Length: 75
Image (tube, rainbow, N blue to C red; front, side):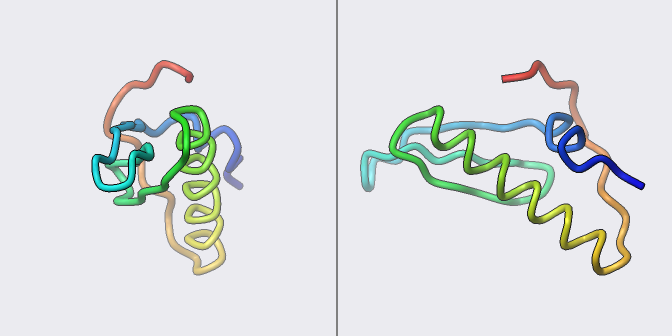
């Protein structure tokens, strides 16, 4: 069985400033998931939680967890 907490650390995350609402937009490019935050740290926290929930849903549906496409440095 997969360790979801460890799996979330394997994906890459990109954080950008959203000029529309002056918030931070975090993306997990491998999974196509996005999350907003008022700070870079909050956006990273929210995207990791979104990835965790997404991976749990994949497991519940009996699907495989996608392998990350890049090497990550822990944030």
